[in-house]
Length: 238
Image (tube, rainbow, N blue to C red; front, side):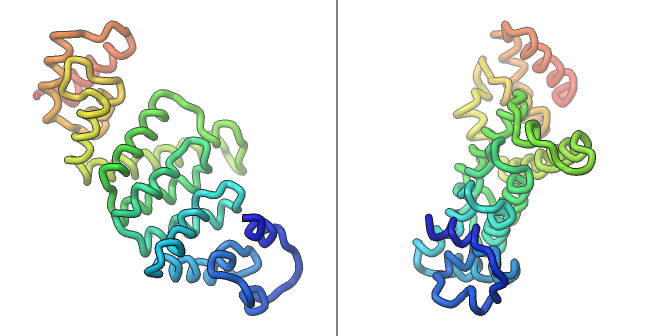
């Protein structure tokens, strides 16, 4: 790791050919002196390797907060090109509010491409739960160029749309996680389950919500209002 950090902080006009001499593929993948297209090609080469340790290097790059975010995004995009659904759980672990929005957007795009396993679906729902509850993300604390409010809102909306698309296309696993983790189908569905029914338009879950509202109306006023809105909206005719 110290070697990687040294490479990231190195200075001097060195050609790509000179830079790659004596370096491992993992070192080349994070060397900023190497052209981006060559770094990406190196990451693709690592992902195609039959050596699991070499493949893991790309995931390590994507996860390492000491590495420049552009390189981390490159790693996620490379996984989107060469990864499989089995890789979706690992890359979806990067859906954390403290990670840069550009990285989270890359994760959303990647799991759209490679598919999303049940563990990935659970990660997506957990991220959305945190966002829907109002947890602050990195962009809420750090100013960005241009109009920060407008740019942040568009990015957040784009990411949410991307993640909802993933859940809709994995409806069976989504229903399983909503049932086993968030209480959908019980008398006590969580606020996340209620919002998910609305945003994903899971009308087949409407009878469960109606029964829950009849048997055990939420004592919390805000949750009760959310449930009533969903019952009078998405579930109105169900």
